[in-house]
Amino acid sequence: MNNRMRATLYSAITLLVVCAAITAQTRQQLPAPDRRAGEGEGPFQRLIIRGATVIDGTGAPPQGPVDIVVENNRIREVRSVGQPRVPIREAARPRDATREIDAQGMYVLPGLIDVHAHIGGLAQGTSAEYVYKLWMAHGITTIRDPGSLNGIDWTLSERDRSAQNRIVAPRIFVYVVAGSGWDRGPIGTPATAREYVRWAKAKGVDGFKILGDGPIYDPENMAALLNEAATLNLGTAAHLAQMGVARMNALDAARLGLTSMEHWYGLPEALFTDRTIQNYPPEYNYSDEQHRFGEAGRLWKQAAPPGSEKWNAVMNEMLKLGFTIDPTFTIYEASRDLQRAMRAEWHDRFTLPSLWRFYQPSREAHGSYWFYWTTQDEIEWKTNFRLWMAFVNEYKNRGGRVTTGSDSGFIYKLYGFDYIRELELLQEAGFHPLEVVRSATLYGSQLLHAPKGKPIAFGIIRPGLLADLVIVPENPLANFKVLYGTGAIRLNDQTGQVERVGGVKYVIKDGIVYDARRLLADVERIVDEARKKTPTVAN
Ligand SMILES: [Zn+2]
Image (cartoon, rainbow, N blue to C red; front, side, top):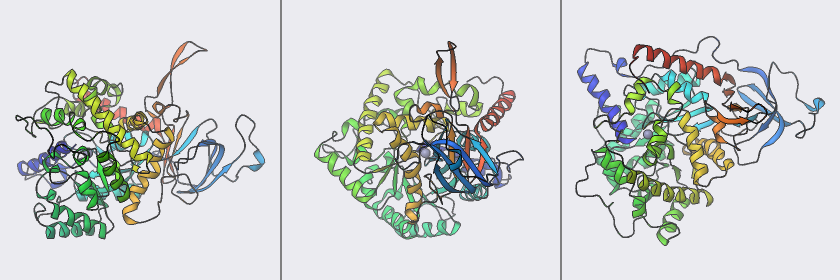
């Protein structure tokens, strides 16, 4: 969330000023501790996952039983070993395993990719370990950190430690806020935009996030930034905030070479036909977050309707430009149903007290805009969602790339859990579950590799690619809820008892096997310890 990010940034800056005597490191979130003994097993010389049903991420239907051979950190072979419901042909199976996982009756997917994943920070009171383990426990093996709000050096360091598997964490792609981290002030001219891109490239970043307000939205500055990034094969993502959107809507930015749009801001504005500026009431003040989010919920109905000439023209042009849409439906869910997000069952066990406090209504702690959220506000947002989902689903149907991002850590949305919720919301938008999985795997990977024009290194289950895999005991295509760490509720008709089924069993990143339940147990322990220190906070 834009304002929250700014809040984080501002609070970090304020803290630095106030605590000038404290070293720079203390204003940042705690980096993850080194991987301890017993945290993850492997990589193995020859790991064989036996008897699984595989969902490969390309859009192909499930197939099984198969044996998957992983040598060190790469997928070596995916071999069909029979047909369902009959004994496996033992003679046909790959041999010489140095480690085996019996995955009979289980499903294997590529590691999931959250392309809008903030590592958290001071404002949330989260440690990197807490955030990473929530992600990994939900099968997320790669993230893009949009903004990298703990600082460029901090995030690059965590990226490298993760790449070396020195920490328990997904692969990290570092997209920094354009203009942040250097001492030459904000980007105010095309020349400084280009200079900044080259400076950040030299630091080693993977791309840029555009957000906030100010002169970065001036078309000549935006053009220079996007062009220089593209020239240097770096990706770009933008949250086209209301303060800049009158000068730069999603289509304008796509034409200038933006790689992906985050959320949805700038899209209805590109679809205006009977206005050029959102119908702001006269008392509107962007810094009043109930104004901001309340009026945002009344925005899509001001745009050209589905199927209209304008709707088609904008969509056609975006498709032709190869533009990626990363909707992050989940982070807006509280706007259409506050109680659902607020009372999600996982808060009880897995939400840190500091994070819970951060979610509470406040005029100062930006992003918690429930000053007086009404029935009508939620109804407006439901209409907003219907139109927005129609655009995204049609974009997918016509060949556009839609990815999965969660933006968790804000607005009652918890890391990992609410990424799974994003999968459910894409299905609600009209995606077949296989289309959802493709967005969560192959398409995410393509987005992260495309700016560099490189073939993908991970993202589908294919020999030669990196071994990032998720093993889940239930069929996620039948019910994405089985991917939640808390599982899905099912009545057992044999016993008459209510059971919890699912939850990821193993997550494999770079050939290293992690027990997902153990990761969740670590998170629960972190939460318990924090509660002991602040016993008065009840979720
Ligand atoms: Zn965000």
